[in-house]
Length: 148
Image 1: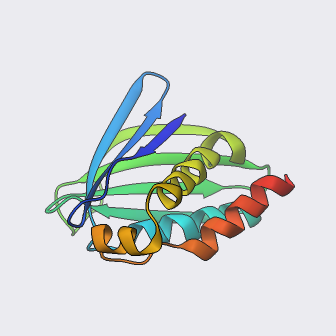
Image 2 (image 1 turned 120 degrees about the vertical axis):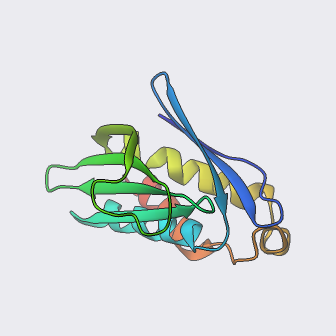
């Protein structure tokens, strides 16, 4: 699995998620706190069995990243695309999915977040994305990975 964040510019950024030979490119808007929610979700997934949804605004559509972890240490990820913010039940289109351990499913997101942090300092990041970078959660994630 591979995750790449493109260059944030004027509140827009492309996120590419690749599983085997399938890639989903998300052209996301800054309007939702998606980067912060992603970092927070990854911290929780590393610590406990939980389910978390991170929503990326496409304007007008949305992509849901649905993460779930169980007591066995397995983590699943599904990407669902919706035509608008209402995300009515059974109206989404399944785009991509995978299951594996934390290292397989979540660490690629952590590495992509750390790459963003290195590429753009806090001031440059905020001027491009208009929201603060989740430094504390990314630092916590780095510690979790180091200690595994």
